[in-house]
Length: 113
Length: 114
Image (tube, rainbow over all chains, first blue to last red):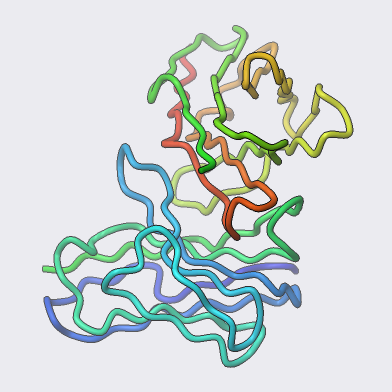
């Protein structure tokens, strides 16, 4: 089954404790991205990757890091989480960006206290 | 810069009534437009997409959308709402030369009442 898998689904952590949210896709997609979803703001792109070892900032990259060492994996790293990073996070993948369907993971609900 | 505006953060309809969710885009070049749906506690899934092949686009679950260049709109409609349509709907746009990203609207929560 074609899917994007994120882990964990739910996470409560404390300010400053480094964490990683994993994302993996099994569709051999080149393009992957991370979004955060906040009430009234829709989805905002954090980072994206057009291929292995190629990553770039989206609209709200501050406080986040990513890496793309393998085509299928695109982890999101929060080196020092803060309460304003409490949000619902989605990973997505697609064949390309312009005329292709994006496939989304189930989401990770992160709470930073 | 590319952007989409969704009018109405919450829309409520009766079961069997017409669903109309509004989306306007801002673009100086031909856009690619999408509607995604998000059911509770799930990720987003594609409802339909406009790719310039036809202005009236049919999607899954009986939804359709019409691209109107003169109005810069891509409104989503469904003739008869069903309880299972209750979800949040997002309009999104991407452009060639507009950066490598899909830009989402702020979403419209659809409520279907008996």
